[in-house]
Amino acid sequence: MTNPDTEKIRVAIVGGGIVGLAFAISLSKAGAHAVEVDIYESASAFGQVGAGMGFWPRIWESMRTLGLEEELRPLASSGMPFRYTKGDQPQYVPFGQSPSALQSYHRADILAVLLRHIPPHYRTHFGRRLVSYSDPAEGPVELSFKDGTTATCDLLIGADGIKSAVRATMYADLATQTQDPAQKEALLKGVRPTWTGQYVYRGVIKTEDLRKAAPGHPALDGPIYFLGKDKYFVCYPVSHGAGINCGGLVSHPERDGTLHAEPWVETVPQAELRAQYTGWAPEVHSVIDLITAPSKWAINSVVDLPTYAHGRTALIGDAAHAMTPHQASGAAQGVEDGLVLAALLASPHASRTTLPRLLHAYDAVRRPFAQDVLRRSYDTGAAYCFQRGALAGLSTADSAAGVAGAVLQELNDLVGVLLEWTWTTSAASEVRAALEVFEKGVEV
Image (cartoon, rainbow, N blue to C red):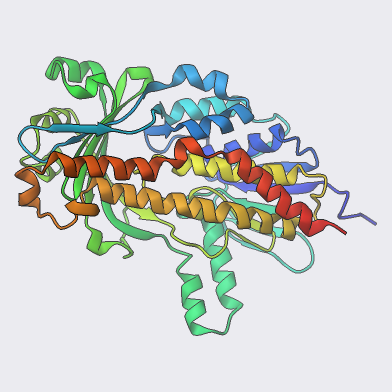
């Protein structure tokens, strides 16, 4: 007869993006040897979604833990603070900068580094799009894929992004377990992400093209925000300075929390992007002129889930807390989810029997922190769009006419407070806290 306390824990990671792969590496680096790992990816190969990704000081601690810092550092662009300017007027006005530096990367560069560190004995399965799973009282967790195949595991990790099939199944199941109509409705809201009321127009341009078109452009000197009423435009270097990632954010706060129809991403005419920034500083339009085929992204979010774990299943990354991009922290928070989970699975107390307590410890520590970052990111975006503080009541026309320098300084200070956690806190403290919760729970 097998002993569930001594058998290896079979871990299924659904989703082979940055968060899923980082979790796989975390398991190896944490010394979680009593696990067997299968990675299920819906695509035919590991690929890239999105262009730019930022690292604040806090995430470097995690990269050192994973043994990735040495390879990632040389690939970084910038490493300079973001400069803040008011750009919704004929001449932009500089007024501040982020209190810490953000190093920016192309996602493909990060993915390439991660893939070099996946242990060779971890099994990878491509073309496996999860449809649903079941977690019976007896026997393993059962996974069902779109191609008709099935698999089993002892622990299911949903790293399958904002449209997570793992989350959808988890919350549909939780909803069936309550007879309270209000609670059922609340749980079913966890199935689908909600729209933030925001769009971002994205494009990557060549640095040399901007240098030729607009010599002396401020984006050539490093990261910069052009802020205005209900909108902003951001530029920062990627691909070791060869490219500039550009994003034009348009906010409709009255539509926050609604559902956005598919598609969430579409290519739009350059004229649509240009029209959004009518009357803005010419430096904004110099960049827009080089974005010939902008993509328009509806920014959706997964807000305030009541749990990141249920039964023998846990959510990490965007599946748990897809957030706005205004603090460039979504992927990094997903990496930290994996660090905490991996440390718990490396604990000598980890076994098939103790998985429910292990996942409780993960949820108890990670969910409050990640949801706080989610709210801070949203508030940062609102501040950038002049929807907080003294600027909140300003009309578009009033903003275009100019505002007092003292008001802009207040905005700079507010953003500094919202971002403070990125250099004053440590993921290591969450690892310690989760282990303490878990180990107290399994003491005999």
